[in-house]
Image (cartoon, rainbow, N blue to C red):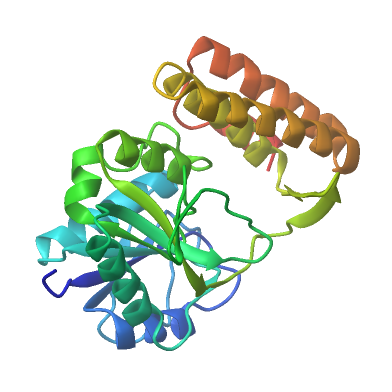
Length: 289
């Protein structure tokens, strides 16, 4: 495999911590770094020299930010992009090891489209073991390496989903295009917001504890993705529906504010049944923020 040219894409919106440490680590390990500021009220600043910053005039969602970064990287000759959330951090040698695992996958006859880290807080991946790698149905995008050619073939990140489920959706389309979605034994330091792990009947489930508007997107988009995959992979779609039902139940039992979250979830179900996509209207977004 030719030596990949990796550009890092950091999707940012009103970061609660400075991005300088993450950007410096990325500059040391990748060929170029772009930060896509998704319409933050106060633009992202105090970044190291040499990093490109693309600022959106309005908040468009993480899918649009990742597509903007992917386009920027492709115009600069990148073969792969490493996508990062603003609250992630990579260790020394992370990119080199990720690229090495990618090469190992190719040597085993796999055709990687995306590869992510297997040690990501309380996130537990299940799939088919291939040596030290794991073939999975979906991968979280933060810390993941994407082949730009594969990403283009899959149609990029779905901007109609806006935010939650974007990585699940692109994973499914990469699989449909004939690419493998893989997990390698690497750690990524990533803060999943206020997520709390619950251990129920021998399984670990995550209570996200996001603002209600995120419950809307999570509910709506999971249902939409299940519908999009129903005929092609009914087992995956049924599993996603089950996980959605569990997430809704846990949220309504354990999370607060219950009334706002109930309204947001119900609205998400209704919009999914109607096939509604795109951003939540401003007044509702503000009410559920």
